[in-house]
Amino acid sequence: MPKPLILISNDDGINSGGLRLLVELMQQLGDVIVVAPDSPQSGMGHAITIGNTLRLSESHVFDGIKAYQCSGTPADCVKIAKGFAMKERKPDLLVSGINHGSNTSISVIYSGTMSAALEGAIEDIPSIGFSVCDYSLEADFSHVKDHVLTIAKQVLKTGLPKGVALNVNFPAMQEEPIKGIKICRQTRAKWQEEFDRRIDPAGRQYFWLAGSFVNQDKGEDIDEWAVKNNYAAVVPVSFDLTAYHAIGILNKEWDI
Amino acid sequence: MPKPLILISNDDGINSGGLRLLVELMQQLGDVIVVAPDSPQSGMGHAITIGNTLRLSESHVFDGIKAYQCSGTPADCVKIAKGFAMKERKPDLLVSGINHGSNTSISVIYSGTMSAALEGAIEDIPSIGFSVCDYSLEADFSHVKDHVLTIAKQVLKTGLPKGVALNVNFPAMQEEPIKGIKICRQTRAKWQEEFDRRIDPAGRQYFWLAGSFVNQDKGEDIDEWAVKNNYAAVVPVSFDLTAYHAIGILNKEWDI
Image (cartoon, rainbow over all chains, first blue to last red; front, side):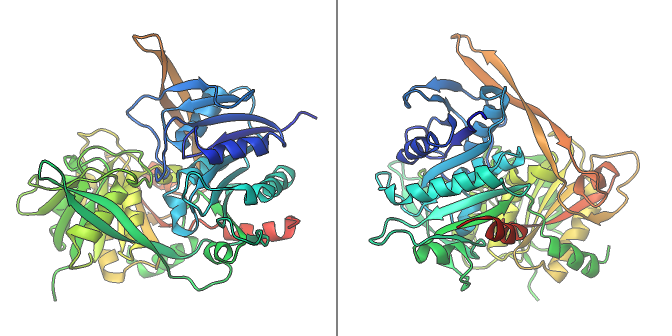
């Protein structure tokens, strides 16, 4: 049996430490190809490059690994991997990350890491986005190694339901090891923005987007609860945004 | 009773014809504030600006209307509207568009138009994204006027279920008027990418992302069926991406 083919991408860019660790780990499970952005793409959501050209070039940052850097977004990376770099063979698994920073809760829709995973799911590739709730680019991720391997092996073995990708978030390193893996739902929460208004040297105003995370959800089956309590949180996510429960409501309420 | 306050954004930028039409229509229903990107932002998905500054300046493209142009994405526009331009009063309605081009089916996750609407829903503002399946920037949108007003009035009257925004797509203008409004689910479909590889004057390769839309869904309750059959398609969409049906499957299958 041939070794599984694993496509790796991320949103922190091809030089990030989290990507390097993910490459090391996935080499234990199969043949690896990397297609990652040539620069950081955090917060890119599910952006794609329309009306502009894309660059793709081979990268030699990983010894003995086929790797490409792309000028586009994480979603672009998966598209160009499928349409060009991996045209001859479809990957058996797509992993994205390991992201430096949390992608729990509502952050999933702003996340470039998760857009690569969702793009994989659209292409019927079992896909996982991994994030650690530690924004430092120098953060030590060694506490998540075993869990990344466990989850990736599980998905290689049993696949994922059609149209579903996994959003996996790990707590930052604690004194105790991670307690285990919990399957969760997305926390109901939002970012409370505060714009920091400043004046540039030319006298014109500009803004920094800042803000704080507000958890509005008291459940214990949510990803925020899991990471706060030192568990790995696994949320199955879908690219079908239909709010099915609302179809009946609108058909009943609306006078159309 | 004060007139409703309506926030208008889009992804084609503050100078687009679709935005102008939406402003004209919404003035019939309430007080209008526009916060729109200063340049086209198609395909931006739910991108936000992190690690870069934002510009916001008053615009005078609409007579007698308070309008701002923002250097960021559609989601940024809604955030800065809420955090700065409309700090004193929450809008009663957010409308985004009218987009020049379809946002049916999977396009919803790439859509800047819909990211503005989803951002509104996150903020508990009843929010609607409007699109016409005609990519021409000169397209005649007069056939959708009545339906845009009907839908906006309905949402002002009955609100929307919590956490739900509307993705509204209209067919391009046909000889017959639009037959009516259908509440739909998101079509299962994808873009089949084909990368157009070219060589620049310096001899380096670059790519254009191209592709064709592949409908994998034979249902008649989907947005693609509705617009193909000259109906307005209304899909209620959610920013909770949790694939709830998969939670039980993973808990059962996984050996964790």
